[in-house]
Image 1 (cartoon, one colour):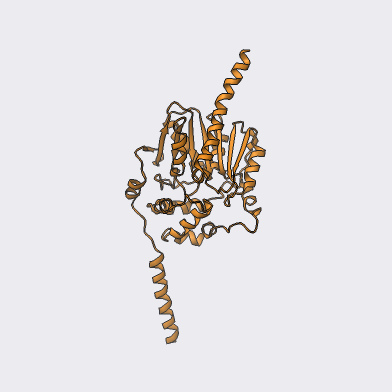
Image 2: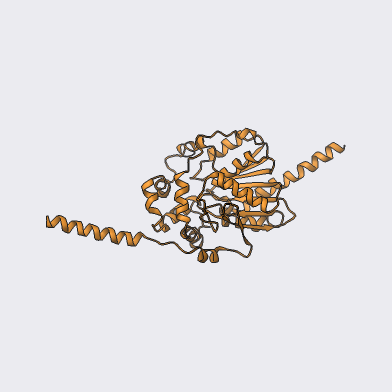
Amino acid sequence: MKILQFLGAILLVLLIAAGSFLYKGSIPAGIIDARYESRLSQFMLMENGSRIHYRDEGNRRGEPIVLIHGSNASLHVWEPWVEILGEEFRMITLDLPGHGLTGAVPDEDYSTDAFIKTIDATITHLGLEQFTLGGNSMGGGVTWRYTLKYPEKVNAMLLIDASGLPEWRLDSTSDQSADEKETPIIFELLTKPWFRAISTKLDPYYFTKQGVMFAYNNSPVVTDELIMRYYKLALREGSREATMKRFANWDVDSDKTFDLSTISQPTLILWGEEDALISLSVADKFDSLLPVAALVTFPDTGHMPMEEIPEKSAKAVREFMLALKAEPESKTKENSQ
């Protein structure tokens, strides 16, 4: 009996020690905001009380391009494109609810519908009637959903390693070859209710680093500074709780049907050929279903071409945008002849 009590005491001590080692408290929003705001950061208050962080940069006379980041990311992923394309285009980026410096929102709604409302509120606030809409990963999925809902507002789409139709989710991983990288453990753990229940108190550094290296295909652009950006933003007060609520409802629209063939907007599909998060086969599906689409793939590139190869990926966007601008002009010339 005494031996069992002794072993139980040792186990309790070990559990307490492990808990203290793994525990990580949140960082006040003001501290994180001061670190990751820029001089062009702006904040908009929505009717539901959400405080949305956005940036409106670049050429105010150029075609507006609104860019939406992916899951657990922030508007910072678009900074290379903003710098490269900003001389010609008006570049608008924002942090979705539960992400970046927008962070947790009062109504705790982190659904795709809430993201669509946030985008629409932002472009209404900026007085935009029409624009090009683009997104990466989850943000790409929000992009085509927004276009289906508000086709009159979207001139063209940019889908960058974008999430596809709900029924494609299994296909996006099932066709990966056996020699490809294994999925980071965090993606599996986030599907488990027991893990979500404790993860708001765990130190996310290891998971963050592994996830970033995986998403960026071990690219040399992954520096300590970039990893710490993801890590610190994850520790912003309320953000871990928001992430767990979002993952608890990740398949909420799995029973919905969407018809991509009704999207008439010209679409540029950009994809990293080494994307181990969303298979290149998903890019082919977009290309086959969207009526007016162009597919550009990049070798030796992962899930984040806008940061991994900013010059090459931005060049593809620029050429696409200039071709769109030239097309109406050529049609006008043809009609006048």
